[in-house]
Length: 443
Ligand SMILES: O=C(O)Cc1cc(O)ccc1O
Ligand SMILES: [Fe+2]
Image (cartoon, rainbow, N blue to C red; front, side):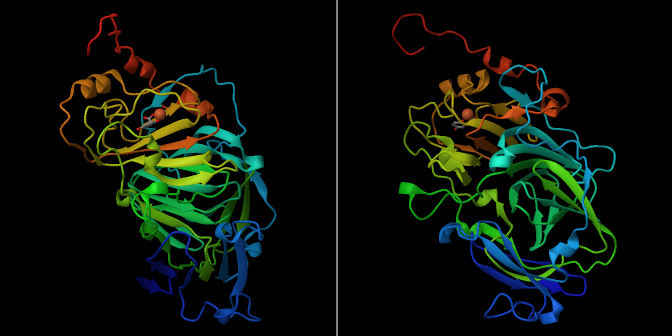
């Protein structure tokens, strides 16, 4: 871990999921023994940031204490409404004219004109209702410019960022995270951040979670280990900017975008402690558990994080991955079965090939299989897996994922009309011929 108080840079992470962390970018900046001393060290202001109601049960109670150069109320003046056209919020059901169906898209292009992270966001689907704090939106981002004097705060949701192309840095109030494709990050609701690029271009997916926070799923009979292990989640150490030049803070609130101009950086937290914090996670540290004798289990075994609803077992969102793994099941059709599902499945491909769709679902691409709409392996995958010799086979160098929600997902105009939709997607199943001829025997 290094820190340079003069520039406010610091890098380094603390391991653990939902821990009570403490960290300071300057020695002695963090009060000991109390949260709110009469005067804080270095002339800092103390401020509490609550991610749960004060009275939430202990296991779900989340708050952090921030020690900052100015209280964040000084980071806002009167707001002015602005439009951030590409970013939509539920409820949003435009009349785009595209009929109900299974859909798939090629990767969105990175813009030619300078475009930063916030302005490079395009919403693909929305679900639920932000006003009731239930549901989500799926976005893609494609950008080529840094947020330098622009900062963002989203009161509507926490953001899960899933890079697919290019490394980025997310500088939050609580510290800095660098992310490469195969890592994901969570920026908590209400936390100020900016995104800068570590490569020329960046593209990826975002899940905007209006509901209860993402947490680790219960492992049930799997026991105390495997799947996503808590120590692989990394929360950044404190880092701050001491910047006394004009900045803009964009606040998203119930789908509206509002801007306030301030003469300094809002990323001015010198020390903090608590359990309401951003984190990142490397998806290749997920330890998959699967079929070791026969059949294909439900994809819930690959849940990295789940955002629960009030109904047990019925997630507002499940974040599920399909990482590299061995396929060893005997006398079984190994890829996903054909299915219809009450949950609505949005998928993305970070790298490699996905076993149910060996072609067409390319890295950077996306698909949507909505509530109760049938889907499953394409013709090539079906024929291949039905006739393959069932020796142990490694699905290597692959990482697809799914944002699965209990709410139907509604396409935006962008998804229906502008994004590179594959008009022939449902053709991937037309080659599935009738094999039944009334006579017994394996066909
Ligand atoms: O539809 C998909 O490709 C995702 C998926 C994968 C799987 O292994 C089982 C069910 C499922 O929805
Ligand atoms: Fe599915």
